[in-house]
Image 1 (cartoon, rainbow, N blue to C red):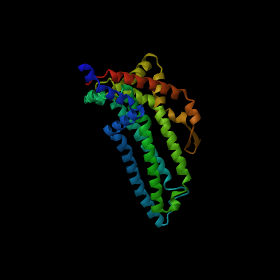
Image 2: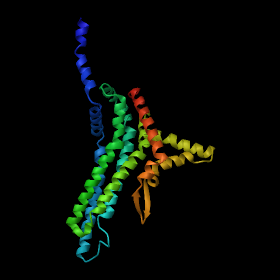
Image 3: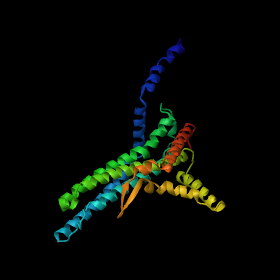
Image 4: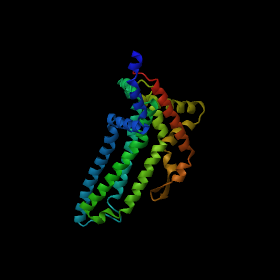
Length: 295
């Protein structure tokens, strides 16, 4: 009788845990990752602010030249190149943050022994890995796009205020650039998914120097293949995974201009093979975390 009475208080708690929607657990897990890794928010923002400050200095210099009678527009707008530059640098920064985040994603909680606490919570290892994978694949690209769009609008307004409306040019090209940036973020997120997954998988079992541990086997395989077989197939595969999204995802129309090529991207076997490998590695990461112990 006593045992039955003692067991009763636990049942409502267990039922309450089971009643929490998976989407809520995922969302709070995402918030936990952002809270523990402030570079996710800070790094792209710092890059955007630095580029914007340099742009403002340049805009004031152009305004001085305009007052002196120089034609600083020369058939274009002052904002065109800086708008492209800030998009490129923020995307590159978000990608690098994603790489370093993944190398630390499962290793840090083993290193500081916080895994003992997190494992005591009613959150499955699959949900934890899903939330961690969402950071480089969803959260960072979405946040980077927000930073880029806000920065470009602020740059547009700043040019109008400092140099006059004529210096901004029409706003249509800016909207087209924003569409291209959104597409580029989707492309890089999907293309680098196996890279993020491999780094996270290694972070689940490596004891130290996760990035070196992740890179060394790949480089050794490429080197052994080159020495033993005289071929560079694996090295070419790595090169395609790092740089291949450009030829597959975009088309060069000349004069340095590129346009999105979604048909070429989504029909690329390299993309789909990479996504399959990423799914397997993320699954392996969840399996690894289930058996992980503090370092």
